[in-house]
Length: 392
Image (tube, rainbow, N blue to C red; front, side, top):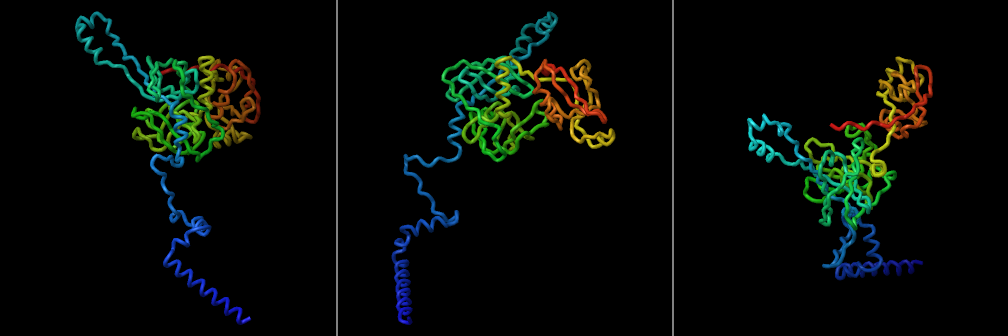
């Protein structure tokens, strides 16, 4: 037994000596075979071997969002909206001409020039339909669209919806690049997105970021708000452009930013593509978006009001005013009532009530559940068409 251990110890000593000599004189011999692969697998990232760059002329591995950008960018266009200069109201006044002469009038007209607005748009149909923002084309007398391939076309204004800030244009060109609609319902905070547009009129630009919030509302931007918030840089000129997911599918229409300087501060807002699509389909079909309206003014329900009137509920929307001869007045809804449900849909905030009523079909009845003091009532309301907002 002792002899066996002696032989084993001598063998180990010789093996270690050989390994030392090889490691000193031929270290590359030890970096071959499975041992090398095992060593690389357990190296920390900072010490991991650097991949050899591809040879000149050879394609490298796909990086970033280049595939998504190449897929979506051709469908994003530049929109130029021109507004005719205001005509001098005294231009036809003979007394004005008598005192100032035709020359003064001509000089004044020469100083006037058309107002030009710049924005972006997204081609969503091979028929030539485009989505953009209402504020990009509002009041425009002439709208020009330029594609990334250099083609230009005059756009027809199909319709606008100021309450969601969506506008639909149409151009008559063939072989149009079209973007695909993405599924906004599966979008989550943290998902990567790209903003594509024409900021500051420098040319098409792609910026990257993530979805930083969903369902943003009560920002005072639109009447109906359900914004996607992103930190992808959105600047003036990006309005109406595309917000796309990592696969290049349209998930939003860029519309506004929070900024104190006019530039991006990392807080931008986009209209969900699902909302923009619904508005587009309604504008193409009917020329307007049909929304329900009952004619009430609302406030959030406060604990003080609940305690003062000893209400048996804790959630709902307080009715602060009812318009005369409006559907709500005809149905018996009164100031001080608390709306708890609209056509079976529970409402807890003013925004939820507004959206629930707007979703009702005009010229059709609906049941509104209200709490009046200690009584729960269900009132039948004949819903009307929501009046179109007056343009400023």
